[in-house]
Amino acid sequence: MGNKKVCREIIEELMVLDSLDDKIIDEIAKKIAKKHGLSDIPNKVDILRSCKESESEKLKKYLQTKPSRSISGVSVITVVAKPAPCPGKCIYCPKGANAPKSYTGMEPAIQRGIRNNYDPLRQTKDRLNQYKLTGHPSDKIEVIIIGGTFPALEKNYQNWFVKCIFDALNGKESKTLLEAQKLNESAEHRCVGLTIETRPDYCFKEHINQMLELGTTRVEIGVQSVYDEVLEKVKRGHDVKAVVRATKLAKDSGLKVTYHMMPGLFTDFNKDLEQFKVLFSDDRFKPDSLKIYPVLVIPETELYELWKKGEYKPINTEEGTKLICEAMKHIPKYCRVIRVQRDIPNNKVAAGIDKSNLRELVEKECERGGVRIQEIRYREVGHKMAKGVIPDPDKIKLCRMDYDASGGKEVFLSFEDVKNDVLFGFIRLRIPSEPFRKEIDNKTGLIRELHVYGSAVQIGKKKENAWQHKGFGMKLLQEVERIAKEEFSVKKMVVISGVGVRPYYYRLGYKVDGIYVSKFL
Image 1 (tube, rainbow, N blue to C red):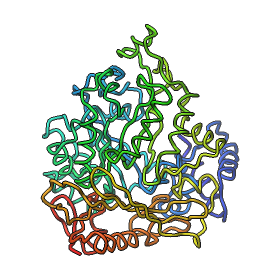
Image 2: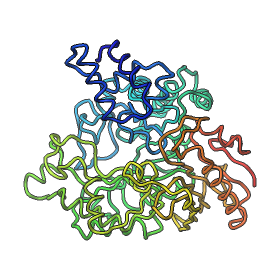
Image 3: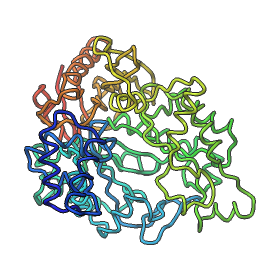
């Protein structure tokens, strides 16, 4: 760690400068370290840790490390459940020592879980502290629960686990999960979204009801393939019908749906590409977001034994890059590609993708081939500005896309700079097909997501050159309410809201309605 006195001297010199960048900070740090005879130059975390609150306000944006962590408007905390048996017997699945099934134990999130003995309270506090040390805002948190199949674990454990996460965010222990959720509405660190990983056959009515009670707003479903013969060959333990059923039930309950897809599973290039076409042309699927995980051959798996015998050939980096580039042509503007590869160290992989920057390779391949990427993440204002694109406020327009999905009607409204293809925010409205929740009927409009992009801005504050808190969210909500009432004869609007976002909706006339917030139009 850098010497405290040296850090203070660096801060004092930085505070008097009108403009700063990485080069200037580096030069000043080196100069002052040399002056004091230090061989170790204080890093940004050391300097930021030594800032007073008033100094931190000015310097944080320059000293922040890994700015992409909060570039999408929220900061993510991944919390890992205890290792436990999984209902699946998938042949590609790693079984790391002291790690949940499907993880090697070397992934950063799993390492954090191991370090904290899989205690949800400690894991959450650990991550909050890291955000503080690296200068990231942590008042808007998206929680992601991973590790095997969480809904397959005992209900009491699930409730305790999520309550502990809320206790860490609240800075105070509550007696019940409900009490912890209520407290989070005004906490320093608010949960704006809660995601749970699951399997299609653990995303039916009883599982969805439990996930909703926990405060879940998004489910990540391990689909892997839309071919029954592939699912059977890899011993997945469910069929495509389960995927279709889970998707419909989740959407009709207001949940956002992410698919995990695994190209390279006993398929060729054309069959894999056809999968992506099917995902967005067949109304039974049409996920809101994707995680694309090309198959990796991991030692001590059944797939590894098949590979050693020459009975299986995985997709390589070049093939994976070309495939995902081609797939991008078919991924529509309402879908977000969250990831394009697993976070597994190369030394744990026997065969498959051997580069850790697959998304970057895909984007370069798309640029070379003139492929226009429409997916959400690529067009988000924060990511566009990081690539040097300057949005034009005069070209911002309200855009609309309607589509049928899982038996219902979807309206995707967005604010976009249509000249530079920059996305500022969007809202998802669903007119459900066969809802089963008591709060929802066929005359109910479901707001499944409202998101405004740009670097995270603290709740109740505004920041120059930031795009959050500019009124985009309220305008999207008002327009979607109008569409629901006038075009679909909707009588009641229901919002699936992260518990920490509920006060925003209270101000707009919404009230608690079971696990949702709602209002009559």
